[in-house]
Amino acid sequence: MEDQVTFTFIRGDIIELWAPTLEKVNLYAKWINLPMARAYSRVALPKSVNLLKKILEPKSDEIMRTDIFLEIYHRDDKKSIGIVGLNNIDWINRKANISIIIGESDYWGKGLAIESLKLLFSYAFEDLNLHKLNAIVHTPNERSLRVFEKLNLSCEATLKDEIYVDGRYYDSKIFSLYKKDWLNRNKEEGALNAR
Amino acid sequence: MPDKNKYPFIEGKNISFCVPNLENIKLYASWDNHPEVRKYSRNLFPVNPEQYKKYLEDGQDRVPREIGFEVWHNADDKLIGFIGFNHINWADRYGNIGLTIGEPKYWNKNLGFEATYMILEYGFNELNLVKITGNAYEMNIGSWKICEKIGMKRELVLKKQAYVKGKYVDEYQYYIFKVDWDQLRIKIEFK
Image (cartoon, rainbow over all chains, first blue to last red; front, side, top):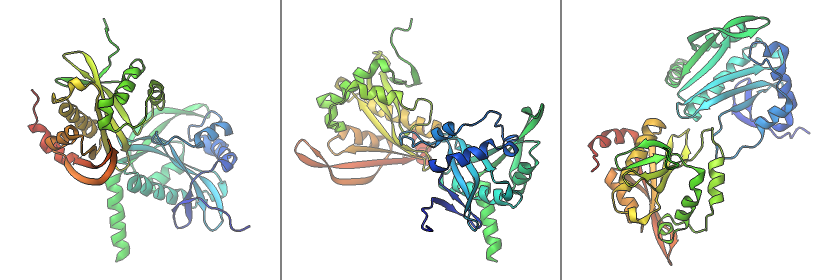
C-alpha cells in the first residue's frame, strides 16, 4: 500500500512540486473555485472540472507549451496542498506570468507559498531559460502582496481600478523578477552560507 | 487589385518571405515529390497536399516548434520555394534552418544565399534565438557551400548517415551564434 507512485518534479525542503495528474482534477477544481482563494485571483467565473481536464489533456509535441502547472506537495504530511504555475509563457520575449494557490487553508501563513515560488523561479530561469517573470497582484490581497515583497520582487506598475471584487474596484500591481537578479541573489546567498 | 494570394512578411532585394497559404498546398507537395528536388532534401516518401493542410491548420496561434514561409521571386512574382525553422527549441534558444527552392530553374542564382541571410536575421533579431544550425548532405553541395559562404561553421560530420542512390553519404551540420552573426552581417551585400 505504501508503494505509491509519485510524480516528484522538483524537490524542496518542506515541499515538492509534482506533475499534475488527471486523477486529481476534482481536487484542483476545488482549490481554484474556493471562495476564499478565488476572490483575489480574478476567478469570477466558475472553472468546471471539464475545463481543467481539457487543460491537463496530453498536448501535441508540435506545440510549445504556454501554460505549466505543478502541484504543491507537503513532504512530511504526504499531502497535496495547492497549485503553482507559469501562465501565458511567451517564448520569444522569454517571459511568463506566475500564479499560485494554496488550496488547503490549514497550510496558510506557514511560508509555503514562498518556498513554492522559489522552486518555481529556479525552474523558470535555470531550466526554461526565461528572462522575466511577472506576478499580477490585486491590492486587497494583502497576503500575496506580502509574499512578493518578501521575495524581493520589484513593483513595476500599478493598474488603477483593474479588478472588481465584492462590489467595488481595486488596483492591481505588477511585480517583476529578472533572471540576472535571481542568479545574482542566489550567488550572494550561496556565498553567505558558505562562510 | 490583389492579383495573387501572396502575403509578404519579410521583404528582401530579390526574394520575399510570405505567409504559407492553404491555396498553395498543391505546389508545396509537388516540390516535395519532384525527383530532382527531393534528391537533395532526401524526401523518401510520397507527399500529398493534405499533409500540408494538416500542418497549416495545427497550432495557428500558439508558439510552434516549426515556422515556415513561402519564398517568392520578386521580379518574376513567382512562388519558388519554402523556408523556415524546424525543431525550434525555445528554452535552449536554437533553431535549425530548412530551405527548399522547389523550382530547379531558380537554382544557382544566389537566391538560397539571400534566403539564408534573411532567415538568420529573422531568427536572431525577431525570434531571439542565440544559435542557428543547418544540415546538408554531402552531395547537396549547393546547400553547404551557402552555409560556408555566409560564415557558418561545420560542427558535425555524421559519417555515412544517409543512403542516397545506392551509396552511403555523410551529413554535415553547420552552426552560427548571434554574436558572430552581428559581426558578419554588415559585410554582406546583394547584387
